[in-house]
Amino acid sequence: ISKGSIGVLNTRDPSLLGRSGVALTDLRPAGSVRLDGGERIDVVAEGEMLSKGEHVKVVTADGIRIVVRRLVAGKPSSA
Image 1 (tube, rainbow, N blue to C red):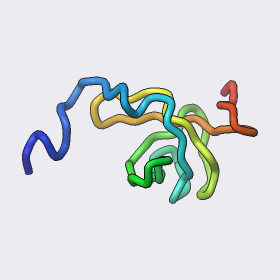
Image 2 (spheres, rainbow, N blue to C red; image 1 turned 30 degrees about the vertical axis):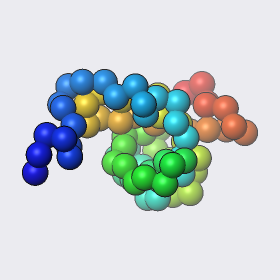
Image 3 (cartoon, rainbow, N blue to C red; image 1 turned 45 degrees about the vertical axis):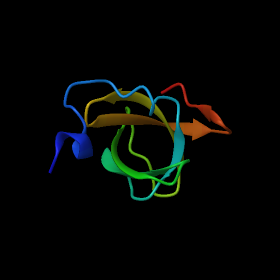
Image 4 (cartoon, one colour; image 1 turned 135 degrees about the vertical axis):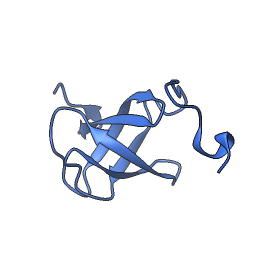
């Protein structure tokens, strides 16, 4: 496995911030999301457990730790 295939630990990936997607698994708090571009990534839900099928938005991307928040009517919740 090369560094190029997994990225660099402890660095931010600004290309993920603000992207939306759908939970492929329950996020308890960790799970998987399919992003708007079709890529599947492992994430952690911020502050609450989310159900499979819920729409989410990426709010933090630090290295391999990607944090998402529930989208409510197209807007992030204030959780």
